[in-house]
Amino acid sequence: MEFDSREAILVAAHNLFLTQRGLRVSLNDICIAANVNVGMVHYHFDNKQGLLVMLFERLCASWAEELPQLLARQLPVRRKLELHVEQIIRNYRRYPYATKLM
Image (tube, rainbow, N blue to C red; front, side):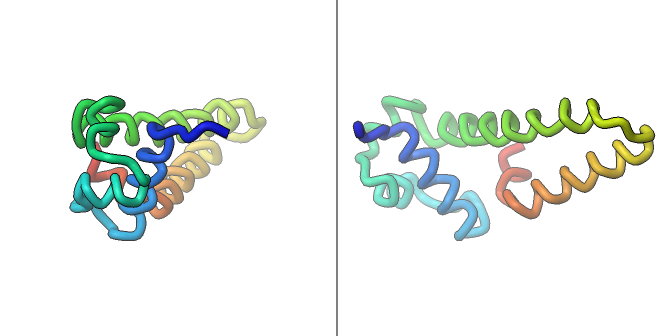
């Protein structure tokens, strides 16, 4: 299996942001965790900001998958809204660093 440096960087950043509870993780720390050099971050994302944007887009895409499933359910509108708010809260707790990316 070929090493995917782009994916390794995204996974390392995600894991470090979760364990460090914030975005103060250095690019060097991300590279060490991903087992890549800083040049690979620049190659795939241009800079740390580009990495953060891609990470946020990935989170949003995963959250967006939940909404059509919820809308398709045969439930009263109020219950769908309650479930949607529960999903938002769950995602916030699961990915607390995401609000800092907004």
